[in-house]
Length: 220
Image 1: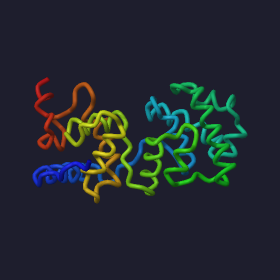
Image 2 (image 1 turned 90 degrees about the horizontal axis):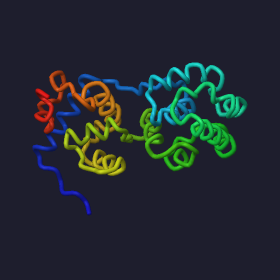
Image 3 (image 1 turned 180 degrees about the vertical axis):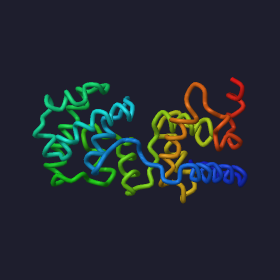
Image 4 (image 1 turned 120 degrees about the horizontal axis):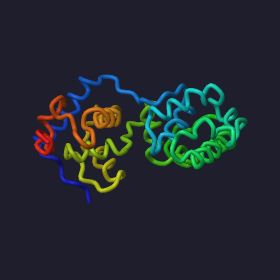
């Protein structure tokens, strides 16, 4: 059943939240380093349960050697592991990266398919990874929900969803259409640097007066 329409005051609050985030972060981008759709897919897949900093450190060397599916297959799984063994779950990720490279070559002529169904069919690429890729490349105004987005969405009362998919659906329903293309980046960066998990920086937050959770943390 569809959720009831938001009251006017709530719509205005949400509009103000994203208008302010747009002011402080007019051109937000992923903090993962990439130079092509393929290297973006690999970087995002490697970033699961790992920091962007650790992934960038690994891919800085990796992409100089293997920045296409063909080069990745030539490198091989055992050749890939030394580049990414500092990243969590590196053995599983190495297998997935190789399997994805093979699938891209065999089924997509060596080019990353830029549609959700085909992307999510690649080994190691789930809904969140596909959303990040499609949003970053301007293909789809997707909102990928990671731990930062999940936390910020709840603190701002934009969602009460219990799962990332539920939060994503809520956000797609309440974020004004004009702000959707950049909403993912605004929320993740806001959560990463301001609305942090343990001690959110409410005193310097540009939207603290619009946040229903502010009183929980001020003076904590």
